[in-house]
Length: 84
Image (tube, rainbow, N blue to C red; front, side, top):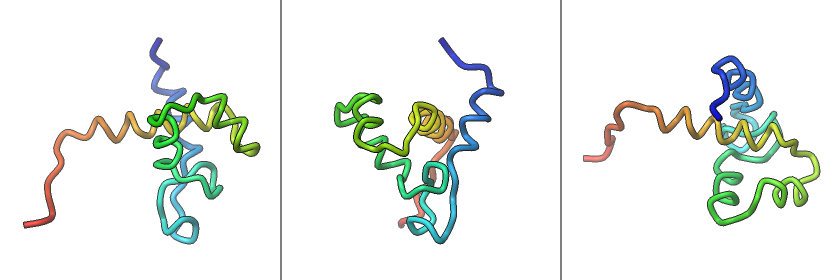
């Protein structure tokens, strides 16, 4: 079941970008958990619950925020190479 856009926007507020944290990579709530790390754990077969069990300061909404962020990135219409 798809979440209404308003709820996704609220989830996306959990993703922060700060040049002083993890070299400006998108992270969860200003913590040092980069979005890409959580995505790699999920794609490697870990369940959301296993991730939450391993990282005590993460909340279930953080995992949903990571997925919402990845979904938003996947909606990009066109990717252009900067390499020639």
